[in-house]
Length: 488
Image 1 (tube, rainbow, N blue to C red):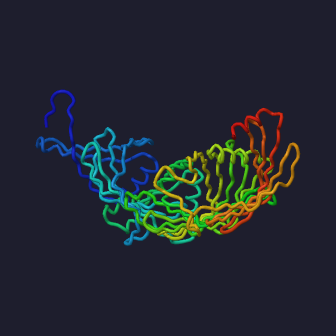
Image 2: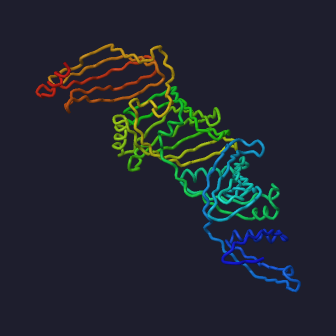
Image 3: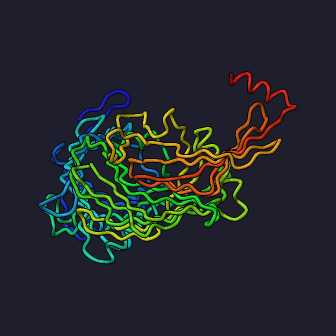
């Protein structure tokens, strides 16, 4: 061998024969735990090939290499995602993908057979992963196959661990999971010493804080394909302190994107919310009654769901001394057609899935709603979804209003009271009950009338009601004369 000139790159290929597998396992575990490699290297060089009389040279030294705590940065993309789908062979739900890794600026290559790992939370194995094989002979990138399997729930502790993960994610906390090599007796694609070494190494991985997005009504609308209202009744009465409540039953069809061919069961057997409504300063101004009949969601096809509700008495309770916030919210929603409020709640939920049943109590949920209604508030304009009321009983489908009596109950120089009896034929399965409601009619800031009723109760079929109209006379106000001119 002759080396002439300046710097010369030499490439050495060497094969290491492992003669003590337990020592190799121990070295790998200590390397991961202490972030350093310490080996005692004995090198023997036979020089006789260069000359019969040249001696054999040997050297022995301890090599210590500290590993950086910050590993090289790998840019990666996940492609070819398939699933999650029910895994008939190993049980649970499996997702397959390919991780395309762009290597850092290092001449790094590796050829490693498939390795298997267990993912644990609270000492419960919740999932497994198969990584590889890795054939990284190229200099710039490598494709790594990945198979991720969420295990079937095998115990109450397993179910509790999954429920805790859901609660932590929903509350924005990071989840600390443990990753270790799978039992070396469960696979044979890697050398025994490597399987045993990985099985003895426990890595703690923090997922980091989960920042759940705030409510995006446009995005939610794009998932809702149909809303069918079978029954609706709104109640607003002075006897209940003007705290409104509704009775509503119906169903909503939700279709999620399914580009990866997902095919697994995910249904809600029971969902019971406990909700508070917040103003723009995040102060609670109302609470919502807990429904006695839970919301449910059935799965009709992969990633297609039908959510149904049958709320008999869902009340809104305005907090004492916060009536002003409630009034502003209602005015903004009904007049300005702009709904702004916060929803802070906990949810008790029972899930039925392909991996088993999961009970989650007090799942935290917070979102802010900021939605501007279109010219027809019941329409959804972002997509082709539609809201359908249960078909009316009459062919016309239009409520009929008939004036049966008009009576002048009282007159003075400044005031006229008019009573109007009407009949309302409501063909729909939704209605309303309200009491002591009055609406003032003004012209150029001049109050000219008050229209209201003591009680209005409308259900499906024939209904009767009496409307009271108070006309106010302002003979000396020019605005009243202008009103008559405009009306004529």
